Image (cartoon, rainbow, N blue to C red):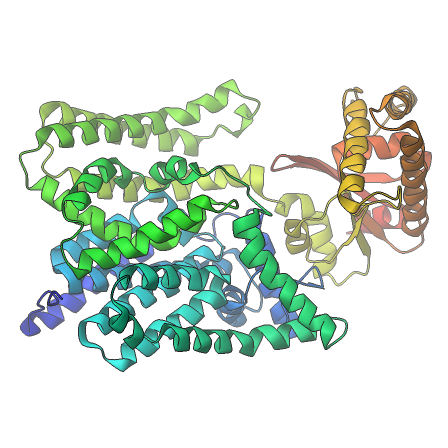
Length: 628
């Protein structure tokens, strides 16, 4: 086993200052303009709403969103958001994102510490730089998702395991399994998957050493720590106890362990998916990957340090690649090990006479910056040309200046400082994007402006009912500050086939009527004409008659849908102020199928992301909004 890289005891103060300066720079990089744009769907407003409801109810055991139990994710991130938000009295964009920033800093710190123990301070510095200045890590560091919290816990686990492997101090083994438990609290089963695969690979053929790591006892301890929250939370969140709660636990475990990975219940992707996403996510340091692969291959049997890094990366990468369910963020826990390997290879490359490699990498990097600078001008050729602004122009000009300067240096062959230039340029452009580009994109992605009329009513403690027809999204809950009742989001009671067959048939019918209504010209939904309403009715009648399904099913579906609309309208059109969200494509067929909806008032109509959404009110609700 290799001895850890020496650290001069006389230089401890300088080392601490060095590390603090590094972390301070990363904190700036990750947190600039953190509150300058809203929470973007799908995950950010959902997770912010869960933390807000935790604050409002004082219940940190059962997670809730829109007033209903939420069982998809463990609580660590939501606890952290709620904790940060307590002094401010509410969850804000900044307080929701701060835990991810802190988790990213912990990951940088642990990666630095691991690389320093393994290879010394120079490799440690570059490992931290490579980790902090790539697309995926920077993005996740300022995004409200569970992946960065998972990565931070696993980075602690990886560092603790290496310290235990060096000296066999039991405190490091305890920290290792404690960090694994934290990772499970962050994201569930993936928290134990990465360490388990690493232990199997690292100790392959070393049975006695594996036994000393106590993997079975450690796994049992992790399971016990998770059960302290999981079982009480599921029992408290179930309408009954006993077998019903046990069934909820079993269902959650099946979905998150078997469903998401092996069966692909969400995000189904081909086996080569990560070979496509990794270069973009690890950019710009992915430009060094071909050289890094050759570098690592030559040293694959070098020592325990290399064995640990490869044992962390390769088994997990293979497992995630053969699993059906995939997302680019699933690879994020591999980033610390990637950073150490890339930093070693780029330092060797920087000190070698390999001019061709450096020139190729420099040319691709310079071209990428130039393309990034040109990209905003493409808006002028699209339907989003109105989004063009002085901020985007400033971003483009600055980026093109950087790209032009880099291109000149590449042409002149001044490439010795290429890695330093890449890191600095990435950091500068990332900060510039956060300040200039993100607020422009926010206008397109945020639901705040659309929900503003309802948010004002909620802040004034006005009483009203709220529904969401045909869809249910958490960004509308978060920014309206009011729960809504989903309507027409479940299967209609039509047919006696299996649920999957019924779902497919009803989806086909909904698609047919939506497409028929979509082609009918409507000048303004706030002032529909008799001719437009008649055209909608005619188009829908034809769609129901010509639908490519069994005629009997089509009639039953049409009858059930109209009955559901009538039932909802009767509940909605009362003396209590009431509103509902509805997508334009659904509002069209609702107007054509059930005439009484034509008397309701459209309060707001705008695009939120890729949805054109309307806010509709009954008479009392419209009067309440006008009185504000």
